[in-house]
Length: 537
Image (cartoon, rainbow, N blue to C red; front, side, top):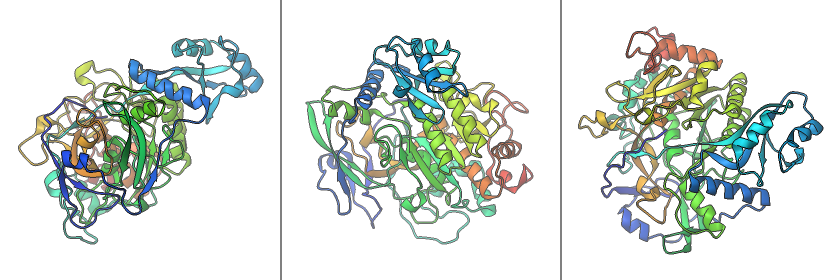
């Protein structure tokens, strides 16, 4: 999860990229680039987002927009239900008859053993869930709760992507910005780990359930509210230059345009995926901890710009709240099942919310039972009540799943990182309070979308094809370090999720009070110690 503090916004220079980095790309100002769209480049796909075709899908889209407008913690009128084993269609229909609209089992949309029901006649999802829970045929029912990717706190300055000489077979990466920006890798002794296992193996797939990761260069001509009216706008998308398409497997969009490229409208998903698997020794930018593994981007979150585009496609003008993004439990649980069924051995979940989520817990238990390790962010709410967040809170009851808190450069708990008896491990998430005057400013740096290109407070017409080295802080940034370490351990031959968790715990550097505590869990991950053998250095 990311945290926001509204830092100053100086003008930043960025490298223009469309799909791949070509030579020394031009450096242009934000304002000039915003005004100079130009035609799509050769080899770039051109298309358009369309409103959903089916009435049921249109209702779902309108419900998402309503939830964003009203700042609801659930999708109005939608409930998720799991029936008890052996309950057939007739018995399901009998249970559904308890609802005022009398839906039938044909109205259910299934994802594994869990069904989503939309009842337009009863927008109170809490009431719907309570009515279903009272039926003997039902194992559990809940509203389709919404989790969040909180707004980011980005470093006040971003960097153009640096290019340097290519190296081969180097154990310590020679990427141009590794030494100056990636304190986080040194803090967990990643260089030592790479002497044991340099970046893992491509046989290991890490699923990133997040805002997406663009895998094709695309221009979408899309209606969008620009402040003056609904106008036709060219939305440009590009691929990160430091993660080749051959490293991406089975990408999936489960929320916006199912089955299509999981376009990242936010940059969060790209940053998280980069911490896990950004390429090494390729003369570009930065590096990921498990730089040889493959990534499976699963889009389960819809952000401000997707919702604005949906509104405009349906003829609705005006602005939504800038934090209008949402990650619905139905999509999260489906994403977990899709990932493990498609071959993911590790699942990264850098999102959360305060409502319990039995449907997500059910999917997590399924994933671990099928051999997938799961890392989930604790949340950034320490200074705003320190509420327990889900799905991270389920980690203590699921062997092979870990909840992850954040530390800064000082190895002290980051001021925003949530605490509690359910925290199990910490990793570098960054802290602007740890800025010691170095170039890194205390942030966790990776290549991602240029923040000012996607910030609705900066631009009315976004673009998603320009990449920079950007520093973020949050437990969202800490979690992929744990996912990447799990991928390295799997590459070493540790296959069971519970054994991966045990290895990470036994090799961790104890922080805070001796033993497990509520601020650091078992301590800070130590990549080399974990790979070297159960904490023996």
